[in-house]
Image (cartoon, rainbow, N blue to C red):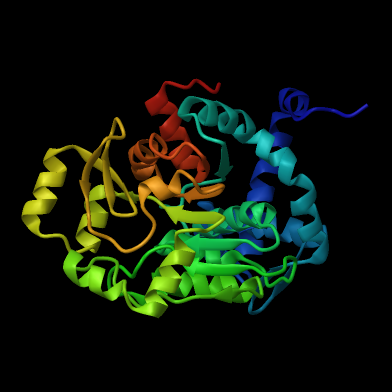
Length: 345
């Protein structure tokens, strides 16, 4: 007969604390290898001395290797992480929160990644890894997948492992380009994911925001027309959610428009739509890509966003796109619970 974690925690609380901490340290090494003790201490918010003690114990157990160039996880360590994954998910209380949040928001599913992406790169990498894992499980042969841009989705793209599991996959940008950083454009992210999945990809050589008259003219160009038809008939959509003020600035909206958006109480943005807290559309940018109405008919939609500051934005967007699987971090999940009056203790 097995012993539950709750019983272990009640009987030997220090063992439960050690398990959580060592699991986090092992996870951090896995995500950041090779990593030195100082960097590990900063990522895990522990002292360097404590990091030394814990990593020496992990090394003695054969879970990591310590080299002059940094620490690496071993095959045994990776097996331990996989074996404990579901258990730790319950230990952190995520399973209950996921169910309650999905019910409260009326969406398909919620998946929570540990930590706060605003505090460390490891937490952002973990969100990317969790999201990539969920997406891989949802892909089927013959899928056309659209992705948007941004730092979060770039992290997701980088987290995909090279694989040839599915046939006839195509990955396309879900919108035109935003801003000046090519590394986080939807074209770049679509290309990275396509390479990882051994899939085909299309590129949309258009900025996200164009004068409507110019946009209508360009849309008649045969190649653009063909790509847009593909984008608007995808099987899966992967998108990120932004804070309205940040996205308005990134899109280069004029100050009077930004002031107007703020006055109307905008908190979140997705696909050029700006939403207030109740989820009402308060402004729409003229963008190139999938529209809100088109999103509602897509079979599989995955929204990805983390950080407590995005909780209101997430909630506003989810009130409009109910057929969504939301992947978020612990920090945003906790704030969503607070906003929705959900008690998880």
